[in-house]
Length: 397
Image 1 (cartoon, one colour):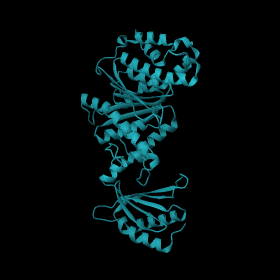
Image 2 (image 1 turned 45 degrees about the vertical axis):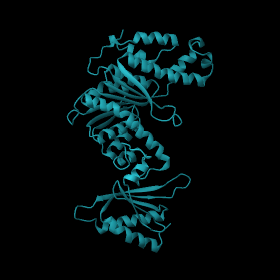
Image 3 (image 1 turned 90 degrees about the horizontal axis):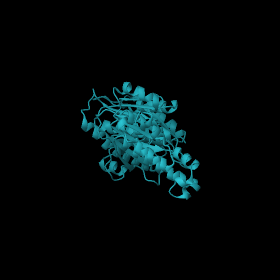
């Protein structure tokens, strides 16, 4: 789909003076057809030096690339000048539009609410995690996800603000966060961006047993240019020994987002045994107790139908698993609250457990944990949860 002579001339005349000032990147995309969108992204030279201008050869190279892309059907073209200003045009007709992300437009993108992860100040993060397109737009498909992660960022804010209020945090003594079974590390990046915006120095270490997700997390951190983040292939058990060295001290916030089934229990046990002042946990895939309930007697359940029907048994096991986790956290000296961070219509795994150690500077004393009370409770319920077994193995009475 080559440009015609008129559109080519129109684009060159309109773009050339604009490009003298420099640009961050150029995005050449196809019209969306059936939900699919092809695009090519080319890095730009950045802003022109003060008092100078981008040279003719660099501009000519971009214009030639734009024409070649149009010939391949990538006719929706955007020159991203900076995080607030874009030049857009359709190569088929060549009419240039200058789009500026002012406060009114930013508020519209944010769904009418002031959010900490703004489309201008947090654009790098939003692009890296796939919320924002390379051309600086947020599609309708991703708008809901954008609101969800912004809401999650605000739910995490009281946790890190509490620690920052308890001790002096500076470049020499950054806030220390450990992300266990980090996966794609979305929560790590959300926390890191929130702390960057608040000018709180951070040291964050994420671990997972999969090489591919660790490589991806490292690449994202490099793409965004975030400092203080590291990622390593390791089990949760290995992370327990290595974390103090990686973080420069014991973790102050332990994070576990969608660690599958008993991996969540391993993460919670590590945090409790280490006396972590705060825990942020989004449980996932609570299979362990469902299997125990199926194998146990129906008389142990409050209603026989729960035992007879797998869907009911699974739903009951989910609630029971997380309820016992909260009981165990409280028994080990944590103040706990459970909040919904995503509407249940989007995902059933929508609970965020926030826990703060009541006496964060006190020594960890397993002998004072009230595990016997929870053990008596679980016997009556006919279950033996992993987290309780792990904590009992820490030497508690």
